[in-house]
Length: 169
Image 1 (cartoon, rainbow, N blue to C red):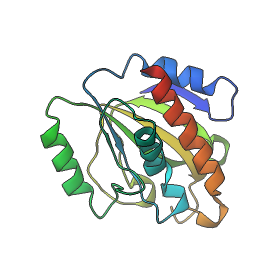
Image 2 (cartoon, helix red, strand yellow):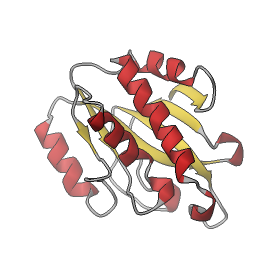
Image 3 (cartoon, rainbow, N blue to C red):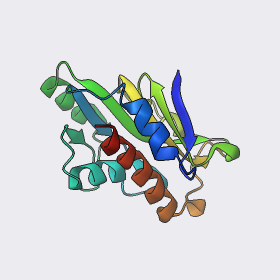
Image 4 (cartoon, one colour):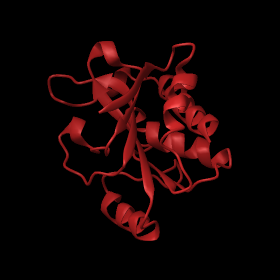
């Protein structure tokens, strides 16, 4: 279920996102950012995590450029996080694939992230709530078109998401 859908480039995007997040983020919130810095399209989560950490965000944040949570370590990472925060209100953040017309959209959803789904992987889900940024379209092979994704675009998406989270608390 979508709580909010907005394109990052809209003038009031941060206001709309932060307004929705105010009803989600509480003292038990744990932010879990999924992705890797080894593929531009998948850096969204770690960029958001890094921005939040560098902004001294008051709640726990996992998944940064220095310590990403990705397909190779997701099982151990999520087990450790869940065991450390038994009653956590998990807010998961990840990049997502969509249609051409939805690229740049940020969606806040009730329910978990399904990491790797867009590229055919079955990985453990995480999140009471989730934020996804649509970074590219699904092509005929269900793979990212990495050559088409600009780091500046991913960074702008990450900034909008991080600022929304910071403003909402």
